[in-house]
Structures are given as structure tokens and as C-alpha cells.
Length: 358
Image 1 (spheres, rainbow, N blue to C red):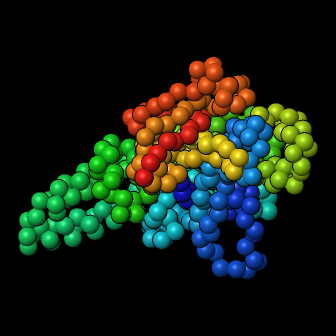
Image 2: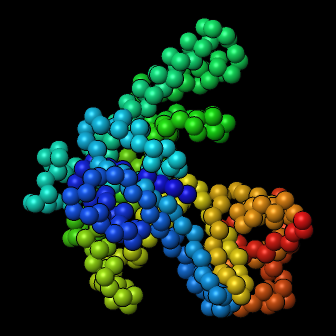
Image 3: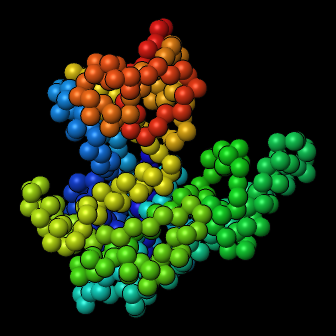
């Protein structure tokens, strides 16, 4: 999974990227450019299973983040033209919800709902320009040779244009899976699922839920394909300097149930309907990323194409039942380990051993 971190200037976007991925700060005076980093999806099940199997290696699922330079009002087309964003599966829009006397907001005031709406409209207008250009090319092609493919594509792009002209992002247009697949080659950013991250003042972390309601962000995030969470980058930076026990105590003092960074990563993961199944053994305990609803044979391909091709059966046990039993052998005795065929729908937290032959 790959997500692009976007936002207006001076919102703490790049700071959040650095905290999520552990990437170093850019050199002072360096030219702003897209940066790529990888964050581990928090999953205590990997550690719990490793305590049983004592593997040589532990591997968590990951999210790849791209940090791109901040934009201003009227600059949304610059995002569409960025090669770094063309392959992203989702967008993470960081909105500013903190005050600062030394870092003024480009719009002159703190209003995260306004900023969320501004960038959404920027993406809509940029996508509209892309769609209109494509329609012009299709109509010119249809005028020369009326091929069924061009005619069908024009109908799709006219549907997109109608939605965009009504200031509706493409994620709300109601596209079929087939239509979304046909659009994968185009840089249409308003079609991407959107996670809004409110970057809070330090003293607002304990009342984050109330702030998200009062600011209007909660209502904004009820739209299709949109999710919401809150962090305080300064606090996350402080916690990153502490060891595990001290960081836990710090969170408890602030009334936080988990690190804000974990929440951002997990919500990014869930926004796309992704889940993890697990494999265990002496060599490795590992979480594998698949889409919810994936069948067992296709899930096997996440490990290796040969396993998918030669799939015979899947030995499956829910993680919590394996942890309770203490071993796969005990699961067999209890009847909680079961054999499934290729049509079995893998569930989040399934521990699977694939039987295959090639």
C-alpha cells in the first residue's frame, strides 16, 4: 500500500512524515521535493506469536508514504502533475489545528474544515482539467474512427465531468470496480480514498474527539471514502525520544490509549479495506497484507506466485485461538485448526499454513 501525504504549506506535514517513517529531516536550504519512506503497521499479534515460535525474524505489514511539497490555494494542478503521486492508493491530507506565533497560517487563521474543503476543491478542479483534455482527445479520435473502446471511454469521462462540475470529488461519483480499473492509468486524485489528519496543539490532545466534532471535520469525514484521525506532532516527537516504558507513562498522563502515529498508520491501512493474515514458524513470524474479502488461493499469492498456482489446501486458525492454545499441535487437538479450500475468504488475524505442490 502506498499513500501520498499532502496539504497546504506550514501544516506540519513533513514533520508527520518524518515521525511516521523515521526519515531524517531534509538538509537546511535544500530544494523541496517528494520523499519516500516506509512505516510499519502496528500489530501486537506478530510479537505475541514470536513469543511462542521464537523465530529468527519478525516482519510486520508496511505502508509506504510519499511526502510531497505543500501547496497553496490555486496550486492543486501541481499535485496532479507530480509523478510521485501517480501510483498512490490513498491520500493523507494533514490539516493544521495548532496555533503558532512564529509560524503564521498562509490563510491568516486556523480553520481545519476550511483547509480540508480548499484542498478537496483544488483536486476537483485539477481532475476536471485532466478529464476535459481527455474528452477532447477522445472526440477527435472518434471523429476519425468510431471505435467502440473510445466511445465507451468517452461515456465514462463525461460521467466524471458531470460529477466534477457539480464540485463532487470522484470518490463520490459512484464508480463501478470496472470503471475504477479503467481509470488506473490516469492521475485522478479526487478519486483516491482520503484520510484527514488534524495536527493538534499539545493541550488539545486530551479533547481530540470534542475538537474534531466542534471543528466540523467529523461531519466532513462522513462522506464516502473519507476517514479522520488526530495527532499532535510535537507530542509524537517527544515520545519518539523516550524508551517504551517512559513513552507509555507519558501517553497515560495525557489520556491517550495509543500513539497517534499508530492510529494514523492503522487508519491508512483500514481506509483501503486492507487486512493482515499471518504465517508462523522457526524462520519467521510475519503479517501479510491483502484486501478484505480475498479468497485463500489468491491470498497465497501474496507470499509467492508458486504457492497460489500450486494451491491445495490452507490450514487456518484464528490468531487468538493459537495464542490461547500455545501451539499448532494443541490447536489440532482442540479442533480449532481447520482445513479450507481455495474459495475460503481469509479473515483478519488468520494464521495460515498453505499446502501446495508445483
